Length: 266
Image 1 (cartoon, rainbow, N blue to C red):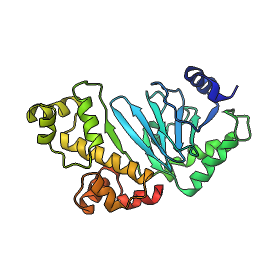
Image 2 (image 1 turned 180 degrees about the horizontal axis):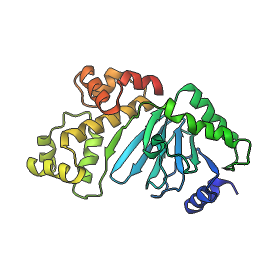
Image 3 (image 1 turned 60 degrees about the vertical axis):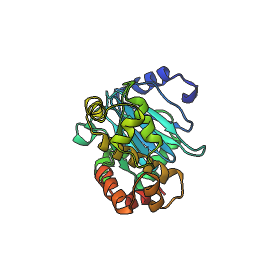
Image 4 (image 1 turned 30 degrees about the vertical axis):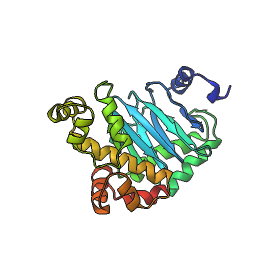
């Protein structure tokens, strides 16, 4: 049976069925898996479009031409928003390497070498055992990750199940182009400024202003991927009055200038 025809629970069993094997699972359609974890480390490469990886308390954006490494045992679920011709490459590796790189979640850009190597895996069957000649090639991909991935791109948004805060977060996401302030948002939701500020700190452990910066950068990343807007237009459409302010905030949160980031995804 094709892997795509299996239920989520069956797929997860197949991934961890053989502890020493490498499991390859391409995905071409939008699908949201339930919260789960694996005994194997996971490499998920976004060939095109946009994906979101949800952890407890955080949602990370995985842009096109980037991959995420997820260590074994980490609860998560992947939400994919892709165009019809896009694909995500998922490769699951045995937990047999103690290098510090593989012990932490990270999102990294993919250079041409890694891009070609991961694309080559499309020809593989799903479970590659150590005796298989292709096993060495898949291990080579894993082994070069630390040297090819020096810069983590942590584009993230804190998330919550708090029913009082969730509609406020949704409002901020849907209105990033406006000149939002703690006062204007508190008035809209009939909450005292001090109470709203405390709500962000107590629930998300960050300030209102810091969350607003992060949601604007997430929106900017989406616009870079989904439109042909210039960086100046994207800055304006995400609430910035100058390209320099936008660029400085982007670098602060994504560890690179928006022009550098755009060059990797466009």
